[in-house]
Length: 77
Image (cartoon, rainbow, N blue to C red; front, side, top):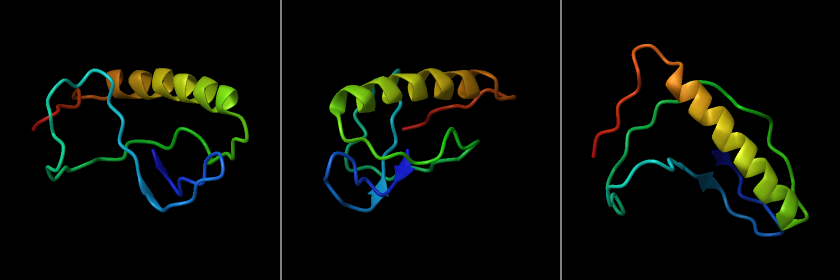
């Protein structure tokens, strides 16, 4: 996710990279990230229920995009 992190009233600028099936500890390591496609426009959430619901939808969409890339994307750490 690339966003301004102004979710539920907290404001900061940055990027969030989420990969749910990656098991290595890469905390404090440099990463190279490739943006494939934008999933959706940024939304404001005023309730954590709807935020969590949207994140689950985003994860499904992201996994679909990643699995359909040719050649498949590789993760290196």
